Image (cartoon, rainbow, N blue to C red; front, side, top):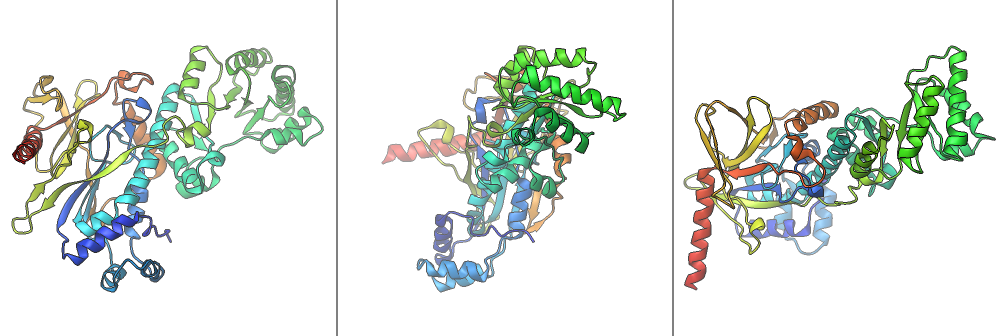
Length: 487
């Protein structure tokens, strides 16, 4: 049975709910979960965490113990607690599928529900989506830096607690890692688990050679030996070669074997080790490396000609150390007029233009170049809008409107990104397996231009507004300015 996260919420969500309840206010609203800036100053992010959001919504109910706890806080009335005791989610949720490349300001999750329900789910949705999208994005960057080499996630012991380690491993796999050291994540999400041995294994034997020999006998088809416990080039690599030769002489087939470097100058040591292994006839031996790696160090080592083809990345990946927060927010975008059934757009204003929200019930369209299948731009539009590929389309920057691009008819294709997940409280979405999402994510990243994927100073993908949405936003801004001047 899935764990209940019903009380995984900020207190003010519940106090606002009680306020709505007491005032008989429960109109249908639209909330958008989105983010304002790509993590790591990158050119994109990876949407992740939807599976856990679905589990959360499915199990969203207040138990007797939950109600009793809230009663003991002495701030909730019995009639409201009675309402909570039979609470269940009845609204609609739309989301961009996990593994999709996404950009700032576009809704990753859209909640259309009575305001009490939509308010309650805010905190958990942000907690889940923010964390997993952050780690999936970091993993995608690390894998891009490795240029096709395998990346193994092994940061569990440095993660900020069990949940961060488990769901961070899942996100890392979706972002492109080939395996994780996290056995529980392997069990929960059916993803490959990988690992070698620690320095303590070497140190527990009388000598390095004996430690290597013993390990090789135990795991002949996955024999990666850690060679830097004592002296990498004078002891570790020679002893590994000796063991490999003995295995070969004994008729043991060497399928997946090699060495791991965990300290020192990885570029220098890997080149020296590669030469030693090749001269001994082990040209297919793997050289893997760890030691506080991230995308920038991997990129630098590749530039230096390091002879490493497998990378273990721990702390800097599982914690996204250089960018520890995703920054997603959840904002009210529209309130339904109960008499007409139409949504009244709402906008949050700010002196900071980046914090001004996009109003209304919206969707997101992605435009692709038909010839290359690369992303041209994303277009945030009102939910009832359609785009005809057989008609020309004029795009413009919503902040610098003089910047325009005219797409001729027939040269672009269109995909709507938001898909239904819950309808009237019932889940209508089937979540793919984690490894299927990983494959989808790899294809998604290939729709990005290389200029957008580069690690430093990437070219941003344009996220534009449709004419109707732009006009709606401008009208709300203009009306607010008139109201301010009249005071």
